[in-house]
Image (cartoon, rainbow, N blue to C red; front, side, top):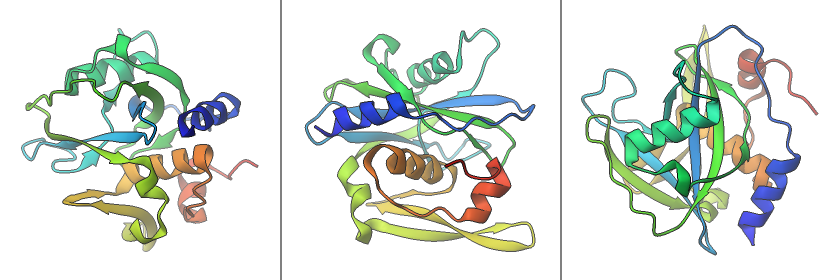
Length: 202
């Protein structure tokens, strides 16, 4: 079962840490417990000041009252899509990343029941949707977006799923999770990784 593989890989994985004095945030990578598991995403409401209309994992900034970054991810998931923390089985963390706004973001991976009712907080979101994990492992579904960085451009992975474009930081978080847990083998441009996180560990 693929979920068992994901859990086993995360248990032995040493997530990348970023030793920089930056404000922190956390997102939840929610996986359903189906035989064919799905990943749950949100789409930010068009009236939001930042990331409006963008697809993202549920999450947000670390609050001083949060006990941990896992707590941050679970709290934000409850606030954004009414996912009760007690219904999430946290199985590990993926590699930390830095957003274009200078936030250090830690992805927390959790499993939820496939029939868990979710409801979008319309103050922040306009949609909650799920995508089969297997979808991201089909080469035909992978594309690359050209993103400006400094005086040049880099190419980052992206996926279209119906009307939804999964790109940017969310796609980077997703790809690193897939590469770690299910051997997706999706290339991330070395210059992007080294610029944001330092030389890649082996």
